[in-house]
Image (cartoon, rainbow, N blue to C red):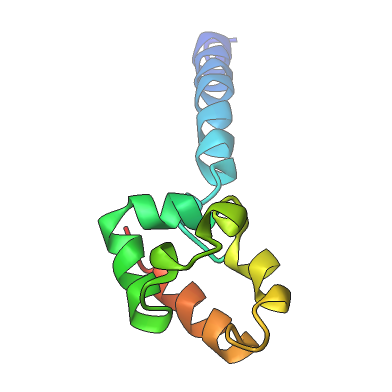
Length: 101
Protein backbone atom coordinates (compact mmCIF):
# COMPACT_ATOMS: atom_id res chain seq x y z
CA UNK A 1 0.00 0.00 0.00
CA UNK A 2 3.01 2.26 0.19
CA UNK A 3 2.93 2.71 -3.58
CA UNK A 4 -0.73 3.71 -3.85
CA UNK A 5 -0.10 7.49 -3.59
CA UNK A 6 2.71 7.25 -6.13
CA UNK A 7 0.56 5.23 -8.50
CA UNK A 8 -2.28 7.73 -8.13
CA UNK A 9 0.15 10.56 -8.94
CA UNK A 10 1.30 8.69 -12.07
CA UNK A 11 -2.27 8.19 -13.26
CA UNK A 12 -3.11 11.83 -12.62
CA UNK A 13 -0.02 12.96 -14.55
CA UNK A 14 -0.90 10.67 -17.46
CA UNK A 15 -4.44 12.02 -17.54
CA UNK A 16 -3.20 15.60 -17.71
CA UNK A 17 -0.55 15.09 -20.40
CA UNK A 18 -2.45 12.66 -22.65
CA UNK A 19 -4.94 15.23 -24.00
CA UNK A 20 -2.06 17.57 -24.83
CA UNK A 21 -0.34 14.92 -26.92
CA UNK A 22 -3.54 14.12 -28.80
CA UNK A 23 -4.22 17.80 -29.43
CA UNK A 24 -0.75 18.35 -30.85
CA UNK A 25 -1.14 15.42 -33.24
CA UNK A 26 -4.57 16.53 -34.44
CA UNK A 27 -3.51 20.05 -35.39
CA UNK A 28 -3.87 20.25 -39.18
CA UNK A 29 -1.22 21.81 -41.37
CA UNK A 30 -2.01 25.41 -42.30
CA UNK A 31 -3.71 25.83 -45.64
CA UNK A 32 -1.80 27.67 -48.34
CA UNK A 33 -2.53 31.38 -48.50
CA UNK A 34 -3.44 31.25 -52.18
CA UNK A 35 -4.48 28.69 -54.77
CA UNK A 36 -6.25 28.50 -58.11
CA UNK A 37 -9.47 28.39 -56.10
CA UNK A 38 -8.85 31.87 -54.67
CA UNK A 39 -10.91 34.62 -56.36
CA UNK A 40 -8.91 36.51 -58.98
CA UNK A 41 -9.56 39.85 -57.23
CA UNK A 42 -7.97 38.51 -54.04
CA UNK A 43 -4.92 37.35 -55.99
CA UNK A 44 -4.61 40.71 -57.74
CA UNK A 45 -4.82 42.52 -54.39
CA UNK A 46 -1.69 40.78 -53.07
CA UNK A 47 1.61 41.82 -54.71
CA UNK A 48 3.13 38.32 -54.45
CA UNK A 49 0.10 36.58 -55.92
CA UNK A 50 -0.27 39.26 -58.59
CA UNK A 51 3.35 38.63 -59.64
CA UNK A 52 2.41 34.98 -60.23
CA UNK A 53 -0.61 36.02 -62.30
CA UNK A 54 1.50 38.46 -64.29
CA UNK A 55 4.00 35.67 -65.01
CA UNK A 56 1.37 33.45 -66.64
CA UNK A 57 -1.51 35.81 -67.44
CA UNK A 58 0.01 39.26 -67.90
CA UNK A 59 -2.49 42.09 -67.61
CA UNK A 60 -5.36 39.91 -66.40
CA UNK A 61 -6.52 42.79 -64.19
CA UNK A 62 -6.60 45.06 -67.27
CA UNK A 63 -8.84 42.72 -69.28
CA UNK A 64 -12.03 44.47 -70.52
CA UNK A 65 -14.20 41.86 -68.76
CA UNK A 66 -12.24 41.91 -65.48
CA UNK A 67 -15.22 43.32 -63.54
CA UNK A 68 -17.30 40.37 -64.74
CA UNK A 69 -14.86 37.62 -63.73
CA UNK A 70 -12.86 39.09 -60.84
CA UNK A 71 -14.92 37.24 -58.21
CA UNK A 72 -14.28 33.90 -59.92
CA UNK A 73 -11.34 31.60 -59.25
CA UNK A 74 -8.92 30.66 -62.00
CA UNK A 75 -10.25 27.09 -61.88
CA UNK A 76 -13.78 28.40 -62.52
CA UNK A 77 -12.63 30.90 -65.13
CA UNK A 78 -10.54 28.44 -67.18
CA UNK A 79 -13.41 26.79 -69.13
CA UNK A 80 -14.58 30.24 -70.25
CA UNK A 81 -11.11 31.43 -71.32
CA UNK A 82 -11.33 30.01 -74.85
CA UNK A 83 -8.21 27.91 -74.24
CA UNK A 84 -6.13 30.75 -72.80
CA UNK A 85 -6.00 29.13 -69.35
CA UNK A 86 -4.95 25.50 -69.84
CA UNK A 87 -4.75 22.68 -67.30
CA UNK A 88 -0.96 22.80 -67.60
CA UNK A 89 -0.98 26.53 -66.87
CA UNK A 90 -3.29 26.01 -63.88
CA UNK A 91 -0.88 23.42 -62.47
CA UNK A 92 2.06 25.82 -62.77
CA UNK A 93 0.11 28.71 -61.27
CA UNK A 94 -1.08 26.48 -58.44
CA UNK A 95 2.51 25.44 -57.64
CA UNK A 96 3.69 29.07 -57.58
CA UNK A 97 0.72 30.31 -55.55
CA UNK A 98 0.93 27.61 -52.90
CA UNK A 99 4.65 28.35 -52.48
CA UNK A 100 3.79 31.84 -51.22
CA UNK A 101 4.19 31.97 -47.45
